Every structure is written in structure tokens, then in C-alpha cells.
View 1 (cartoon, rainbow, N blue to C red):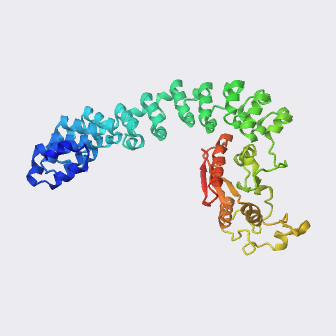
View 2 (cartoon, helix red, strand yellow):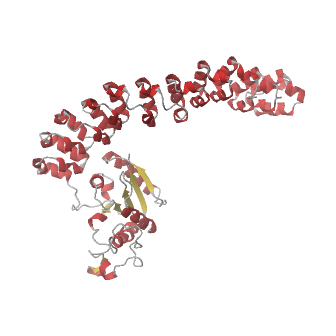
View 3 (cartoon, rainbow, N blue to C red):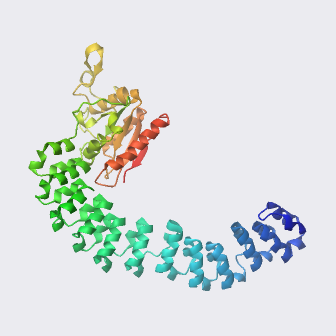
Length: 481
């Protein structure tokens, strides 16, 4: 073993030399100690006695953490605090082999979780409900450690625990005591809603009418609007309402009548949420500038810079979410340059009694649609071109656009899924698009609102698809919130 002096630390030659040595050498403490200092994994071929030798074991793990797997886990050394402290400082999960008296030792446990937060699972139960231990563990290892934090107890009423925990773990809010006194504390509630706006739901009544708290909550999540006191005096404050409508135009609905007549506020609301125009005063709805900002622009003619065409899948209800999506789509400098068909503008007839019956076999083909060709297709146009008849089955119309405009131009479908999920009619449209081998970009949300900034995610996904040659026709799901 003399040659160890010239071998670099960590060199596999050390492992080989010790494995080839005579048994008496493998048992010789000085040889093994010298070997593991060069390559900790050499502990694997050491004798059992040496695998239970504190100095050898610590030297091996210090050289290579993976050597820990070869350490004797049942030896009496695991009852010794000094040894365990040194070991968990290098390998926090080693706490699982410590004597129970040491898993209940605060210094040992804290040392372990500072190395590996999830080591908290091996600590005595009282430490899993210890504020300092829990914060240290989650700070160190996030989700893996949070799994082992006690989810009940007094610490979930302690704002000094709750605030850092919610900041680090979004789902921690579900375990917070919602009846605790801290929900009456403006500073606490303000900091919580800045991280999770919908936490306004748990705030004391007076804080649901607090200007700072409300603005912060709605800014973080427009859906927090649901929990704002609708009778609060803040709805008479122009600056507050202006801030709110810049997060969601829906806030205009609750503004005072005087604010609803304020052009700056109404314009901001309509720019954020086009359908908010209906909440403005009658005078404002007649204002040319307001109308220009809020119009849907469906009838406008424009030149499209993209040859490719798109088709929408919006559901049959013409919800505010879908209407706002379409309006914001037309404001997006990239997306507005695809000629885009909105099926809701020509969905008038169906060959079956129920427009959205997904069990109906019709999928818009000659073989499946029950309407005759004379009703479905085709009116003759100049030059012999055929086009859809006005009374055609909506499925036939949708399939016709898929095949003749979308697929033919290497286009795509944008499917807008609101927070309630897909409507049955959209499920039918999905089937037809997949049968036609048309790329589907499905946007998904948990919110009442859609914003111009969120559509950038859709824009980037479509650009990326074209940049890569449109080779992937699998559905792309894009989460907007």
C-alpha cells in the first residue's frame, strides 16, 4: 500500500489496490484509513470492523459522500452524539440511523436538516411541529422537506411562521388557521395577499374594504375581486378604482356612478377587459374613443401578413372570457395577422336535435352528417368554386374550414378552455381537428380573466412550432394562469 502516496485523491486505483490486497491488509486499520482518505469508496472492500470504525467511516464519507452507503448502520457508534453530529453535517439523511435519543436532540436535528431539509422526516415528532426547524428544513430543500412538516398545530397561527412558509410553499396556505387573530392584522394580510391574492377570502371584514389590501390582492390575482367588499367607500376613490380596473376591467361593475362616467377609468377597464364596456355609464358607451377601444372588430377588413390560417374553438356560450380572448387576440401584433375563423359567427344549424351531443355520430363528413349535400354544401360561386351554404350543419362547416382553409394552408386551431373546462361542443371540435391532423393549441386557465400579457405565451408557442417546421401535430396545452 506504499504506492498510495503517489495516487491522486479519488483515483479508482485505490479501490482496486485495496480490493486486491490480502485479507489481513483489508483489516489493517492504518492501510484502510490511508485508502479511504484517497478514495472514500474504498470503504466498500474494507472489513466489517473497519466499516464500523468511526475515524475510517468519517474520513471515507468526507472524501466521497457516496461512501455512506457502505457504512455499518447498526453499530454502537450511532449512539454517540459526537459521531452522529459529524455524520449528519455531511449526510443529513444519516439521521435515520441515529439512536432515538439523538433524533430528539435539537442540535443534532438542526445540523441534519441544514444539510438536507428532508431529514426532518427522521426527527422526533416534536421537531416536525417546531417553527424554527420547519422553516430551516423547507428553506433548505423546499417540497421534499415540506412533506414532513406537521400540518396542524399552534405554529400555523403564528404569522412569523406562516409568512415565510407561504412565500416558500404556495400550497402552505391551505394549512394556515383561517380563524386566527392574525387575519385581522393589516400588515400580515397585506403581505399574504401580495403572495396569494385570493387569501383575501380569509381576511377580516374591515380588511376586505382596506384600499391597500384590496389593490394588492387584485393586482396579484384578479379573481380576488370576488372577496372585496362591494359596498366599501373605496369604490368612490378614482385612484383605487383605476388601479383595480388595470388588473381586471370587471371591477368597473362595482364603481360608483360618478366613477363609471370617468373616461380615464372606463378606457383603462376596456383596454384590460373589453367586455367591461357594458359596465360604463350610458354617456361613456356613446363616446367614440371608448367605442373604438372596446369594439370587437369582427367586421373589419384587414390584410393578413401570414399565409397560414387559424380557426377558433370557443364553446357555444359566448362567455365573457371567450369574448375577451377574441378581442385581445385581435390586438396582438403577431396573432392578429393570421386570418382566423370564429365558428360562433356561422354556427346556426345542426343535423341533429342537440348541437353539443357528443354521442351524435356526425363529425362533419359526407358519411356522418345527416343533412343532404344540397343543404350542407354547396352554392356555386363564380368560376365554379364551391362554398358552404348558410344553412349547413355546424359540424360540416367546421370540418370544411379545417380541411379547405386550415390544413390546406398549414394553419392551426386555437382552443380556448375556460376555468370550467371544455364544453361538449369543443370536445367534438377536438376530435374533428385531430382527425384532420390539424395542430391544436389549447389555452387553459383557472381565472375569470385573460390578459394581453398571457396571450404572449400562446404567441411564443405558435412561433416555436413554425420555427421547428410544424413537424409535431400533437396538441399543445398552454397554461395561461
